[in-house]
Length: 171
Image 1 (cartoon, rainbow, N blue to C red):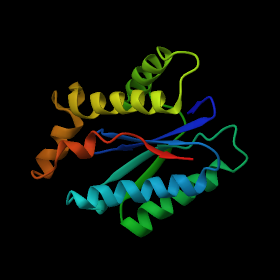
Image 2: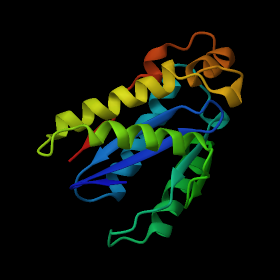
Image 3: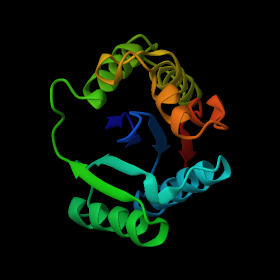
Image 4: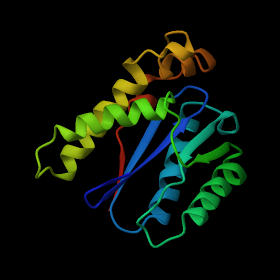
């Protein structure tokens, strides 16, 4: 998803519905791989087994010179071979998918920013939406539990901080 000159990348934990994001300006492949590494290293610090995590990412990198399929293959290889996790990419969002509701909320929040917003404003907005989506929002598909509550039932020592992380920023 492109906001002015910033590319907003999202990953979703399939099991809990938690969303994690990165703001990237400029070249994509190295920052995206760095984001995936930071995400998996962060969850390992909270004793979450990477091989139990399934990550969903968008395969839509339209408007960039690099080939989206190469991006998707790179992400899958990094996630599956290096961390033992599972990965799948999607081209379009199902209408009742968690990601669709996330994007609706995010777009609504970003549309309220002033026309001349700074990257800090965008970071703060994405952080607030991530925090709401991961820690506050109850999901009826998951018995009225938040993504954090779902993950905490599997990992009792998990701190809410792992789900309230702001977007990583790469320039």
